[in-house]
Image (cartoon, rainbow over all chains, first blue to last red; front, top):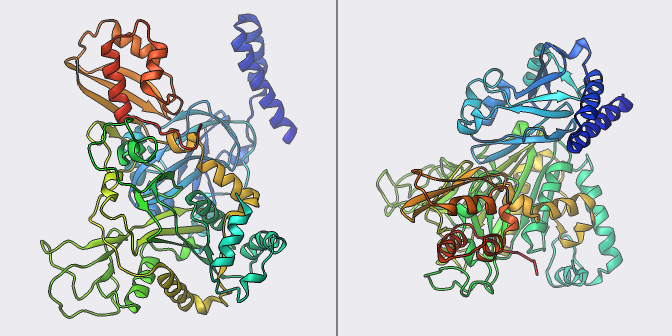
Length: 169
Length: 421
């Protein structure tokens, strides 16, 4: 598995340096190679999953892009969110890293990602209205979209497992 | 750090855990910092208590973060420290909005900024961005900082503020209580009325609405991780600088910046009037009493600069001191330069970098706007240093209008060059 990650990463690096060289032919050729190597997760993780850090991830239909957010339980637990720090688009991230932060009632908490890859989109509307994170954390108030570079890491739970996990806590 | 300083402190400060401090040697010290890591992480130690002999806010915050990240998940840890004079902003705050940056460095003050007040005369004051949320506070050696790290499941925002109030009341501070913002205040009501002495949220002097405002003596800020919660606060015991604190926390740009993130709520503050050493002992006792049921509380351990030898603490310490953390971590904001050449120039900054520079009402500033854009858009504020010099080196030909802009920027967006040559 590790070998596959590094291939994907090497391929990405190749594309970016190729783009900088501004040769359309080389560029296209490299792109195509990358397209073929884009990572697709196994079917088992395509349904919405929850982490022990109270984030959720859900795969798009292509299995290559994931949406990440925080769970209803977490949003409720944090109290009124007054600020959210989102990652920058194009940022490369590894599983387990903090990709942003939330502040609520004088408390700072990190947003962690269980998947590595590249940030493709962030929910900028949350920067204007951070309080919306309390209203619909598992729907409209998603946090970021990530083009993944490998299988998720750490423990992932189904909705039922996660509910049991939060009840135990 | 200078090891001799740490050693000296140990030799001159009585430590409850060490009846014979004179016998310490460097090799013992070296063993001390490895044993700190081991003791902290030992699952058998469910209740732990530390005190720092360092006055360096960067060292103390890094040790505190290390405690949060490495103490056993079901343990509760008390950590006490006192910092040299410094201004500490919350994780998601804007230093240009919260702090009068121009007066932090005593040596640089002369002629550098338009400072119409008396120089406070405290000497150099550090600026620190902490990892927890909340607002801006001023620390000095008359403040005791206390922090409690506990399991997230047992955490409430008031629990340990209540513990501190109990400790205060036991030494006769009967006006102390926890308020609705999780701060500790001293009630200023004139008349005593009946109240429950066990109620940490009310005192005999709690005034009704419209009565005298309580004085804040301790704030609260938190950092939450998956399994752990850190609550820390700075308690004003005997600060000699109360009269000058407002100058440090009053930014000249406060009316010119529109910022995302967290803005401080300013409150009237007061000293409790207790000796720092005595109160820290009282607090350690209160903590021990509160958690005695959970396990044996080992003697209080001393920590300090020598623990920068622990790689994770060193890393956290260096991170806190980077320009990226201090300046570029600032949430997005817009600076308005009003009444400039009959218009307002709006400068948007995100990730510490100037993103856009516009005039408000499309007034034609000729080449000026374009020159300023070319010189500034894409620049990181932390790399600018002196605004006049920076713009002069970028704009040709230079004229007095640019000087006006540069002076205004120097007043509103200075970046003090801490520790740089």
